[in-house]
Image (cartoon, rainbow, N blue to C red; front, side, top):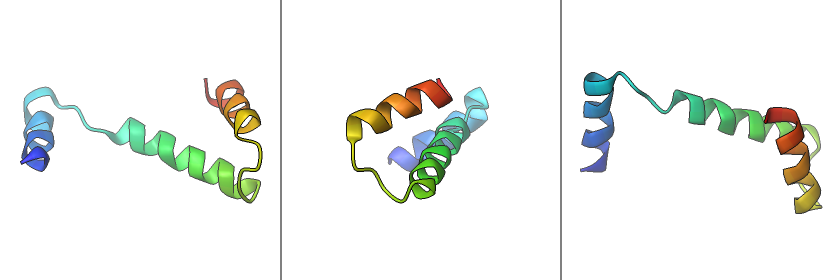
Length: 52
C-alpha cells in the first residue's frame, strides 16, 4: 500500500525522493573512498562539514 502513496504523491505534488537517493549515493561514495568507517564520530563530523 505504501508504494501506491509514493507513486500517487508524484502525480499530485510532482515530488520524488531523488534528493534523498542522491545524498545516500554521496555517503556511500564517501565511505568507499576511505574503505569503511572506524571512528563513527569523526565520520559524522566529516559528513556535516562536507555536505552540510
